[in-house]
Image (cartoon, rainbow, N blue to C red; front, top):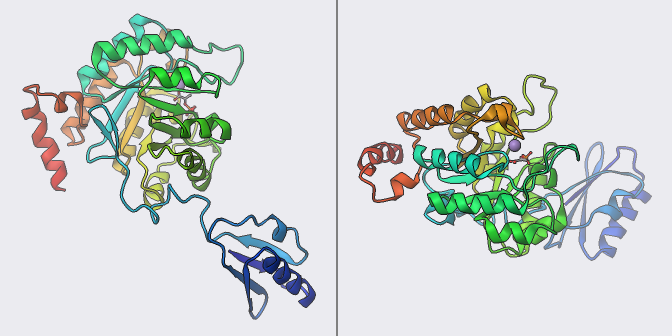
Length: 358
Ligand code: PEP
Ligand code: MN
């Protein structure tokens, strides 16, 4: 850690900072430069609490060189994490497609969507049962009933399912039904929820808060991992900006930067970023192009009738066209089709082989 002092800091103030560092049990190495003094601190194994230093007179800023996350850090764990959910590998050699309705609304709706996901070669079915809504008067999801419908869709299609846990009270029931637990953007810094997710045997998808920095996202992942759950994937879902042409702004540059910082699998959610279906497919392709391990897309058999996020939900025809276009571009996923012994494997495999060779 480095303590940077103001240009006009007095010798007395510099000495007080050194004294405080030593009092905390660390070593202070003052470096008096031409215009200001910088003090380097050594002797800390873990991340230091800098609050006592920040308040001292003469201190301009304290710079943490040690990161606030360790388990998520690629320097500490250089091997990329691959999360296995049934036959699906997340963070493996092939990108995955997660798709399904924003919210589970009825059996007919979720089963129709699930069959489309399966037939088009998607890997995982999404569907919200407990919905984090901005307004308390909006549809809050079907709750446990929604989880049961999701489980039925899994049984019918064989697709693993992902659904959001919005609080610690309902966490256990969500955990008991799903294959992957989603922590939503609004809950990225809900530390009790993160810790509970850290004690779960199920993988977790952590969505980036709409105003969160990448270091905050990684620190949130660290909360989960430090409780013992290392199966964490991160999801970029758009951040707040001054754009008024989309719901949020998809921060595509987060993907290569996170790739540099962490070994965790990275997913892009173009649906919540765009907020409008015409932008979803180009943004999904862009997410894969910048190196995401997968995309999560909202689809609905009847988007006009959707109770939540209809305008951003792809129709099943649009989704099918999107999936076909991925196949044509050599971005076909490790779909259930590919993993099964189905004879269509032979048609899909050359594309994959071509991609592997690049
Ligand atoms: C969702 O994926 O259902 C969702 C609510 O997304 P977010 O938390 O990113 O808003
Ligand atoms: Mn949604």
